[in-house]
Image 1 (cartoon, helix red, strand yellow):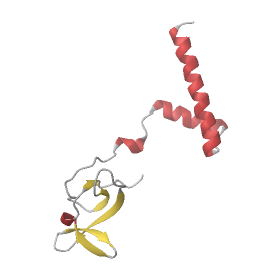
Image 2 (cartoon, one colour; image 1 turned 120 degrees about the horizontal axis):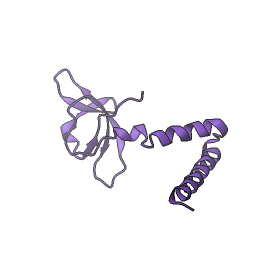
Image 3 (spheres, helix red, strand yellow; image 1 turned 90 degrees about the horizontal axis):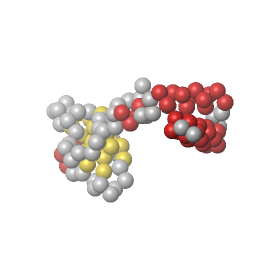
Image 4 (tube, helix red, strand yellow; image 1 turned 45 degrees about the horizontal axis):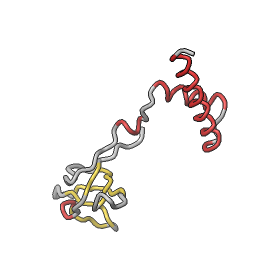
Length: 115
């Protein structure tokens, strides 16, 4: 058996497992599952991974939604950053604002809205 035939069978096996998973977990079968599989094979990089923000200790410089965590081991959560009339950026917490500069930790964002 040639290398091409071997990798073709391997790819078919992966495809079969993927289609089985789609049916079991998401109840997507038949042509719908096949179509999704073909689309993924054209561009296997998920679009939501293309613009994932990275963690930084720099405070936000613009309004928007940000991931925030105090320490790298902490569970992150999303905060909304507002801009006051004075130009000060604040984190919306409990219908009040706290200066972003007082939130030490790690930030990632601003998050892009879905298309």
